[in-house]
Amino acid sequence: MSITVKIPAQLRGATGGEGAIEVDGSTVGEALDAVFEAHEGLRGRITENGDLRRFVNVYVAGEDIRFQDGLETSVPDGAELTILPAVAGG
Amino acid sequence: MTATGLKCKECGTDYPLEALFVCDQCFGPLEVAYDFSGIDAAEAKRKIQTGPDSIWRYSDFLPFDGRPADTLQPGLTPLIKADRLAEQLGIGEVFIKNDAANPTHSFKDRVVAVAVAKALELGFDTVACASTGNLANAVAAHAAAAGIDSYVFVPSDLEEQKLLATGVYGTELIGVNGTYDDVNRLCTELAQERGWAFVNVNIRPYYAEGSKTLAYETAEQLGWKLPDAIVSPIASGSLFTKIGRGFNEWLDLGLIEGELPAFHGAQAAGCGPVAKAFSDGHDVCRPVKPDTIAKSLAIGTPADGPYALELARETDGTISAVTDDEIRAGIRLLAETTGVFTETAGGVTTATLTKLADAGELGADDSVVVYITGEGLKTLDAVRDGFAMHEIEPTLESFAAGVETRQTTAV
Image 1 (cartoon, rainbow over the protein chains, first blue to last red):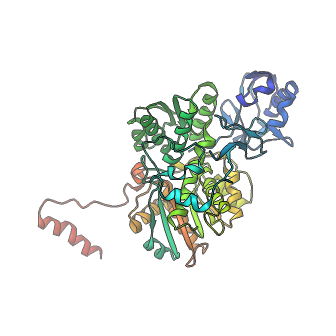
Image 2: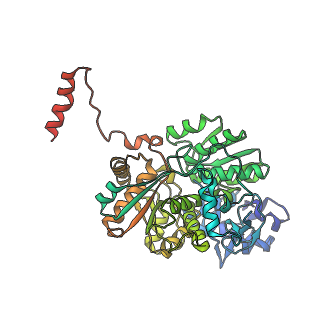
Image 3: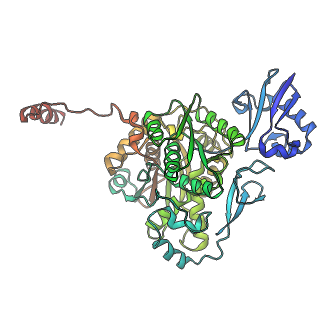
């Protein structure tokens, strides 16, 4: 299944400048693993001991995966997965 | 300039003083780093006391060379000794830091003044923000004062008063169909695509520094002393942790003596992810979907939550949550005992003060500073139907019959 993973500006140094990567996978975890296989430099920046780092947010079709099943959240074919830094506001 | 660079709060990686906000190694937030070693405490106090009546009297502790031009001059708001409130709650001394007395009536003028000054210095010609309302007011006003363009993004269901008090400044006001967290995500994406200074995204390390001035003012207004405890609202956790940073900087430099006050955080039960993590003993917050009348605190994914939790625990403080009814009662209690009319966030803070007093966390030996961050006129729905107006004819008889008789009956 094809998923588009959107890479934030801060991480594009590790993808050769690419802002979007097409991968296969049925869950967020599988999709991210596929991204890491293509760009190993991203693994340690996005995850720590197999979990998302605490200031990394991941969205499937705009919905925060922490409201769903985390890395187990299923990703429908053709969906967009967005990685963004957590930013405080007010 | 005392600011030396930006530093990642998580892994310590250094960055230059540019429009950067996130560490590209670990995604941690960046914070301004300083070298205060050239500052003499006595000289610094003299300089502050002869400085302008605004946050810019503390410019040596902000990331600028000298004092930026700023016509709105926020800060130096009143610190009110609230004896009747203290007596009613059985607390030794209560001081209300009334930050509604700012140019756009909330503490956000402090952070926006710093952010807009830095944006201009970095060469931006447009500022923007994701906001729950108060920030929207402040960004629109400060952009107008500086003569630059602005884009303000808010949840479309925001209180009407906050929408009107934004649009009036001639900003591009964008109502997003979603929660604040949706607005924030959109702006984080937009900040990558547009060359604008999003004050709470790509300029955030500078913006957040503005909150330290609340700590400096508190210490100066108390006669260069610290209270035993503070109560502050928590939305993202930025204000709460920056008050801690401001006190710590002055303790390290010897401008004040003693130790950090107990830090008590206040959240609404309908959006209390930091309070929940505190009571559960967790060091990270599980996000929530907000459902509370305290819309200015309705951030379900508080990015500075972990740091707020650390600060409350280190100082023997607490973080708790209050219901919407308690918030309404808090607004009334503050208004009736101090003459200060606050918005829902101040209701959260006052209700939390009440709760801490009831639980014996604060008592007759304590001096407490309560941070009232916004103005009651911006959230009028919260006090609607809370009291009745006497309607009479313009005659003495009607007054006597319509008001005095009823008062006698009521007693």
